[in-house]
Length: 95
Length: 416
Image (tube, rainbow over all chains, first blue to last red; front, side, top):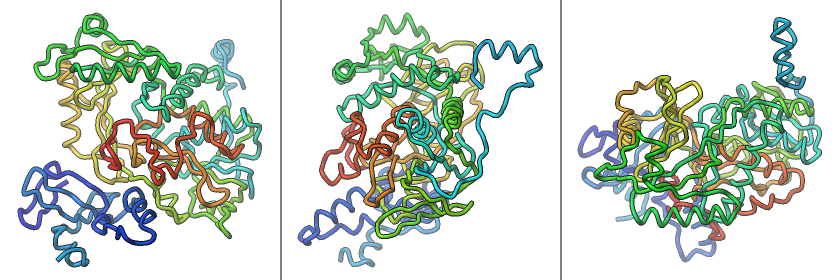
């Protein structure tokens, strides 16, 4: 697989390490009344779709940026790559 | 028809005209007591033990494709019970004992070969860890034997024991481990279950579950609705996809694992060997091919094929201990999709929906577990209580902090 890094261009996937679903950007509020249930789901439950999947990759063998990669889990075709920083900002997770 | 040596001779003398199909092709009934989704090794084993050990009738196994066409037909055929943790080892040891009696139980030649498995040790710290593991195995009634480098060299003279980076310092052997002809496991269980009246329905895809007021009433399939008092999911690899139809999210990611077989060679490798410093394991099939594999690719995939960096990694691991592999040509490579659970251990449990049961999360270790998985799942389905060796395989262990994490990796499926 080739990941088209937004800053560095096409890079081999072996330069990256894989974390999992991009939903992990949204860490639950630890002060919520149902924080235990939320953190159990956050830590352990996954959508695991057969098809389009948004996921976090870390460019460990490169510029050490986190990316949100949109990839089809049935074909490995990558349709979108963004810096996780930009995604988190757009989704209101950081400033 | 019971298979026997006498039968083979009789058929040989009469032109092999007396063999019949090993299982029927029934039309699905409108309702069963128990419907098992997934005609792989685990599903067929569950049906067999339900009928034989737990006196259940009116059982169906429904399979989207053909039986044995999933991971039971794609694995590297190794059986062993060399686990460390209390939640695992009694279960896998029960499985190994069931393997030992499997062929008589099924009246089917599954080519169970207890040729032994050897986990190589490359450092003093690893020797300590493997000694501990061996002791845990012995405490649970399994066999374990620490071998010296000299003993290993005598048995496997081709191993590179003096590798500068990963010298072989010894090994943990389980002599009762070995290999089994994987397809024959599916076929043997299917035939045995069919002979006890289980309906095996192939080419029948589950499209959804009929759930009313928190109770599962049956499954909607490509061949119509099939009612069931109990519905048992048994589709490891596709668990996420199937259980999503029941509205469930699982502590599982689906990953691809690659496996490889070389061209056929004369007998060179009498047992199963695993590399302790990387991830590589190898055995020789009865047809002569070296069957080997290593790590999963490490990203979510349902594609049943992997990428080349892992091929390179596996082959580097192989070359580190078997320099002779460098002259061997690869015959085939393939991928299978795994339920990678959050702690590397499986789940055999009821769900929050009445009448809906779950078996999955086998990671890449499901084949060796086939008999015990079937037995424990049958126990759960028949009695609504977990089998004594499978009490730890619960859904709520993540919430309760009772993970069964053999490698201590945490909730990161691609590291297990």
